[in-house]
Length: 116
Image (cartoon, rainbow, N blue to C red; front, side, top):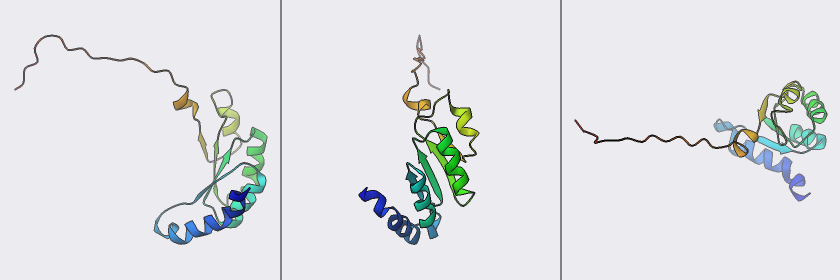
């Protein structure tokens, strides 16, 4: 709750000190109230965290192009198309890295290696 109260001032401070020098300010939100607050504060990118597909769709409609949107959290191969269909600008899918199975690939050199 305390973080939410400070979200607007934090975005404004970041914009005042960083944004003039090519930085974009991204704010992570968990609901539509957070989207409204991030828009009012002037966020460049709004990260929609752990929202169901229908809520992402509502958030994208609420943003209406005033900021870029990124969906993240609970996104995997099974719902990727549905999330993409919401109109969100970017999708972060942790399943690409945290659930991947490693492939053991080795290169064994036999015999002498000659240098030139």
